[in-house]
Amino acid sequence: MKRKTYDTDLCVIGGGMAGLCCSIAAARKGIKVVLVHDRHVLGGNASEEIRMCICGARGENNRETGIIEEIIMENYYQNKERKYPLWSSVLYEKGIKEENLTMLLNSSCMDAETEDGKIKSITAWQSNAETFHTVKAKYYADCSGDSILAELTGANYMYGREAKSEYNETIPPDIADKKTMGMSCLFQTRETDHKCEFTPPDWANIYETDDDLPFKDHTKVTNFWWIEVGGNGDCLHDVDKYRDELLKICYGVWDHIKNRGKHPEWDNWEIEWIGFLPGKRESRRYKGKYVVTQNDVEAEGKFDDVVAYAGWPMDDHFPEGFHHTTSLSTVFHPAPSPWGIPLRAMISENIENLVFAGRNISVTHAALSSSRVMATCSILGQAIGTAVSMAVKNNCNVENIDVKALQNTLLEDDCFIPNLTRKVSRLSQNAKCSADIVRNGKERCEKDLWIGKDEDFVEYTIDKPTDIKEVRLVFDSNLNRNYHNMPFNYPLVQERYVLPKTLITEYDLEFTMEDGTTKTIEVKENHQRLVKHFVDLTVTSVKFVPKKTNGAEEYRLFSFELR
Image (cartoon, rainbow, N blue to C red; front, top):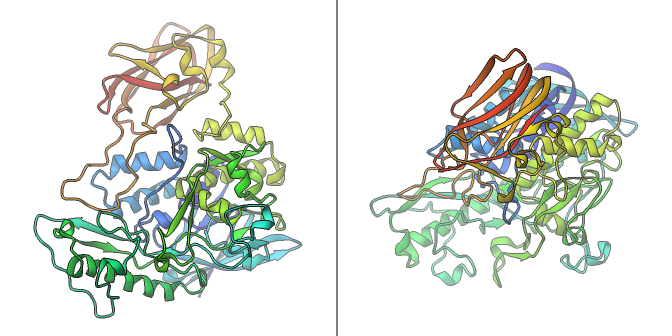
């Protein structure tokens, strides 16, 4: 067997959305990163192997931005027909384009060496290359969802549901247990122009009537999220057992729809794809420097060290899942949107160099039911990746970094943090600007937009020649759009997942030099919300001139800033 060793700044375990965003964020901040992922494609529950769409905070202008918005915009640009293999390609491309990031796919973390409460190395087995990879890092970020490093390092963790009395919550049971939310094998359907028949395998379950599927709505097109099992058992070690049960249910439900129930609305539909890898909702959760509770959620998470946010309801699935037959399989307990998540909830309480992001952060079962969705996990990943980069550069523990500096860095990278406003550069504040609204540090609401028509522009003028290194722009990507990154299903007449019409796709940046000459940067086919232009010029003015949108009749710009 071959063996390879890596010395790096950060080792990230897990290439779901949290792990990918963590890795990209840290690599872009200049530290070396090794990403260890046990599958051949990235994305975790959002990958083509599981196919859950990326959900997040509810409410007007609360959509998550930063790296996750960048990835989704790239997918709209490259993958207009919504093909999952191309979605995998977009995720893969985001990783391989980072020069400070090494990705080890098909590599399962199987061992870890610890000493004096600190991880020294981890070892992963890459099955398709018959290679053991040993990674020695300053920090380890477990974004695996299952918290694989907890068992391997002795890190403290939680599993199951706490008792009501433990954290004075109302959602949990009276007595603590080891039950969790279950896992699902999703399946997708496609509409055709003809009637489709279906022959089930002989091992599929049989559901003769609608009474056999109580509270399981199958009268409309869905992704069948309610086909869920495992919450009463072991979601860590019995995955194959539950996969087998899930597949029997999936084929049985489709057999009922096509052959046994009266569902003419499904006549022209066929199975497009069925998942053989269950998507998990809950397993181990690390014990961090702070445990976020239901009470924190309901109080809007107003922490001093808030670095991310959630806004999904406390969507608490019954452990029985599919076999829960007395009501809908989940209870949507109300939660504010947004509510803040603190850095302390992503730092291990007993392993010095272990951090984490995703559904395995330090939250109670009740709080997890709101924080576990993937857009939230993605911004958690970006936050902790950025935090680790600061710790490495300052040679300190993550918990001792300058939190205000971290918060402002995240804001500059287009990560919204509730109740915080981004600090605008002194250069932009001191220069004369034809539209003050583009330098107010607010980049979400309609009232903070500069709106222009043809031949309108925004210009900075400076009293004396000044060196500038960067121009930062934030466009309107329609944070209130009502479609996901990828589809649940494929109707006969499909709406293409195009870039938002509100995006400015063509523009010029015109620089006036100290000698009166001009230099112009022409941009065509922009498809991002956050754009940074790195320049090295001495100027007396900079003008932003919009030329074209993706369909909107007006030009919409949140921020235009000089550094």
